[in-house]
Amino acid sequence: MDRFRRAAWAAVLAGGLTLAPAAFAANVAQDAQALIDAGKADEALGKLNDHLAKNPQDAEARFTKGLALVKLGRSKDAIRVFADLTRDYPQLPEPYNNLAVLYAAQGDYDKARDALQAAVAKHPSYATAHENLGDIYAALAGAAYGKAAALDSGSPSARRKLAVINQLDTGYDLAAAPQPVAAAPVSAAPAPVAIAPAPAARPAAAPEPPRSAESSARHEAALAQVAAWAKAWASKDLDTYFSLYAPEFTPEGGISRASWEAQRRDRIGKPQHIAVRVINPQASDIEDGAVRVSFRQAYESDSFSDTVNKVIELIPADGTWKIVREYTR
Image (cartoon, rainbow, N blue to C red; front, side, top):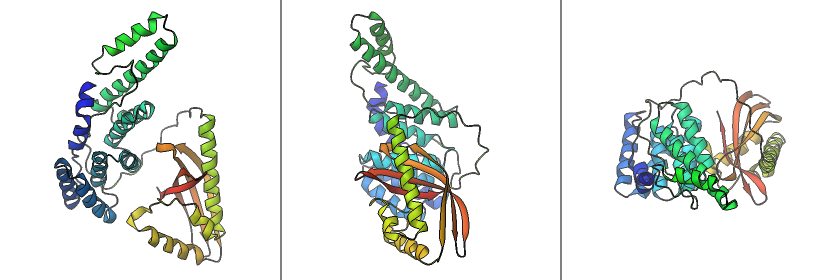
């Protein structure tokens, strides 16, 4: 993994996609990639943001935006970009791989492992992810053996196993403090991806692993906020409704926060009667301590009703939870 540490970030930023959703879109991403390669990542990011404001589902431009953010040192924002791509284009393994780059750079090997496992599950022939997953397992094993050796210095077993791990071609001193493991770049992806394919039949779900008490508490708090959000909407309590959104909340579709709020005030204020039901809400942990709540939303007013799959993402803020993203699937 010495080769990863020496070249990974340059490699991630230098790699391009073979996605080609449209000629114009491809030119935007390619021009932005050229700017990144020339050391002008901030200019590339501006070009991509302008394009994505009008074309929010351009997968290649979104991917290139993630690379620009990495180059600018904005890892948290890059993680969100790649995580969103895994949501909107789950058939692509490369965003999972680059999530692993960022998680491992933070020393979060568990999340890096999970991201790489998702990559190889989507594409079992994706050799880069398999190799990087092996390195992550080696880092995890080395950390465990190092801890065991420190706790029981009289036992040669853990030290012997640690020595074996250190002899692997990883370049890691796995007995030392954890260091980031960088994965290789995205090299190619199926094309086209401008329109996501229809979802395939879902396999039977694997048993959910037990959650920690801390995780359960986060989930309960987030679910309570979603219930409060639905209640405020149904009761047309606009002050409470908007107070549940974080200052950094960005509406989907590229519209401004001010335009979104004006639109919501109009749509909530006009009907005489509104009913909102949150059906089968499911909470899950995502990056940086945030929680994602997925559910079926049943809406009914004087003249309109519908049922959609809704996702709300919340972050802890000021002792409560605030909505930072909201979208329908």
